[in-house]
Image (cartoon, rainbow, N blue to C red; front, side, top):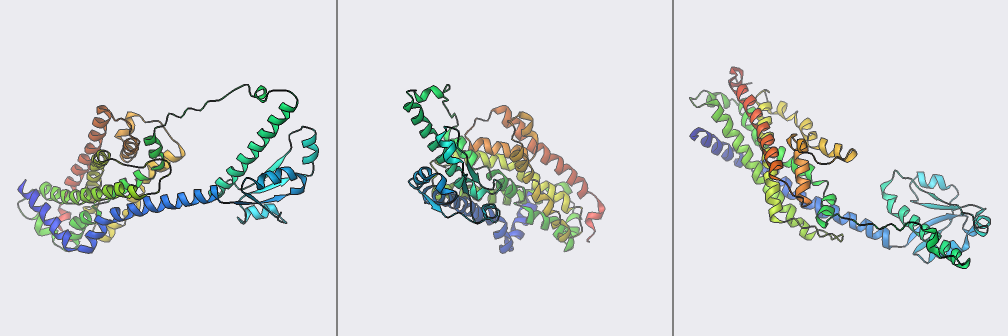
Amino acid sequence: MSTLLTVWKKELVDAVRDRKAVALAVLMGPLLMPLLVIGMSTLVKNRITGQMEKPLAVPVVGASNAPNLVAWLKGQNIVIAPAPADPDEEIRSQREDVILRIGPKFGEQWRGSVPAVVEILHDSSRQDSDIPVKRVQNLLENYGQGVGALRLVARGISPTTSQPLRISDRDLATPEARRGAALAFLPYFLILFSFLGGAALVIDATAGERERSSLEPLLATPAAREAIMSGKILAACSMGVFSILLTLIAFKVSFMFAPDFGIKLDVTSWTVARILLVLVPMIAIGACLLTLISAGVKSVKEAQSYMGVLTMLPLLPTMILLVNPVKNQLWMLTVPFLAQNQMILKLVRSESVSMTEWGAYLAAGFGAALVLWWVAARRYHQEKLAISA
């Protein structure tokens, strides 16, 4: 135990001497999280507010074919713009978000009580045009329903006759659940920061010392190699925990200043504490895995070459759940990266986590870290590790 603590203290002292590297490793998350939360929230709110409340310019082809409809749209904060020469090209070139096309038979269809066709031209692959398109669609649907109701009344028929079903929508989503949906990006960043939070220290502690020829005399001492390695891993985990704690505090504080979307985005201290507990196994997994990699390479540069692949691992669950949403199942809490993703979302949504789920998650997380520790310890016993590269 004394060897472990001595190595732990030595590695932390050595790391603190390189202030720039420590600042980059520890403060990256705390500085980046407020920028993401406040910056993205502000951009989204400004976009929604601007596109929903400001006058919307809509070019109309064949406006003279439906003067009443055009006049009604003008009263709904829609600015009727002149028809372009080539409407399709205007949409493809992204010069216009939405264009209305009213055919020459609109008046004939309207007078004959036949559904009159109004064509909405848009590009569904462009997310920036979603709000203008939905806005125009809703206005046209409201106009059609209003005129249809008046036609029935004029014929002495109750408008409710054409509505055999009255659909009542009861949304059981809690404010916390809606908040969780808004924070779908959160797990990836937290998992990434925790997984690679101690990367600089753990790579330098093994690959760096081997490259500088300072690892060989350390391994030549009577101290057990497992204790030496564990001290280095513990130092990396300590820095990782400190960094992720600052990140979570910054995350909590940033939502106090983030724009309000009608959903109070407030993360309690209890939730922050449980998220930290969720991330601790990932910190240990990252430190042990990087120690294993560092013990098998000859230089820091070679060890850093693995970082590109490692940064992709936390992204995989987010991508999979984005294209293929699934219901939470117990076995998911035993899969690294996927388990952290599901647990963080459950906590942010204020969903209950049973003791069985906590037990399965923590056992699987620390179990994976223990396996990686054991494999890294076997590599630490290889004689070639003691030979400087």
